[in-house]
Length: 267
Image (cartoon, rainbow, N blue to C red; front, top):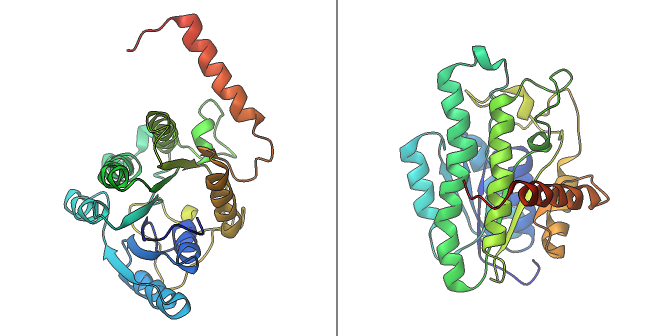
């Protein structure tokens, strides 16, 4: 990470993990492309990064659930200067599945699944051509919480499903790209001290200054530390706060056991 330079494209850059990751990359010499819905927040962060690091900063105001906006960001992501993609944008759409508004359901799927897939597809070919590149897709520990009941966990059928997709997609892509110079990671934070829980995602949190939800959680910088350390160690799945990797090894072994017992069908 210290030797690699270029331009990093960061989605969900207006607050939380996205803003903190952008600051960390800029401090390491990366130019950045900041993507989010809130123009003023992006402008404030861009000014700070330019003043503190002297790096080049672009801002792209976009709602990644809107097809035209996603296409515009994907075109930028396909640029031959993009060496790092952080797919951080995500919305939760928490609530009882039977009462979840269809419009919000579609928006959650668009941001959490389609945008992650489309932007990853946009960057990988150019990264392979250059022989270097990093993709970090942000999922959630809730990707592993499917059978657990709500309360105290949120009602999360759609959100948990989308984050399960991000985990499986990223792990499978990393296996496909094994042996190439690309680094691929899925970052699975638990409750983090951001404003994520202050909105279901239908509209962004208002206000120019970042805030945090009342539930607390892991400090954002610790999440970034864990991600960067895992990239350095070549770990595909990063769960901040998980000191022992044995649960992930047991998960992989259980998956292999299921596949072995059930046969080799590809359907």
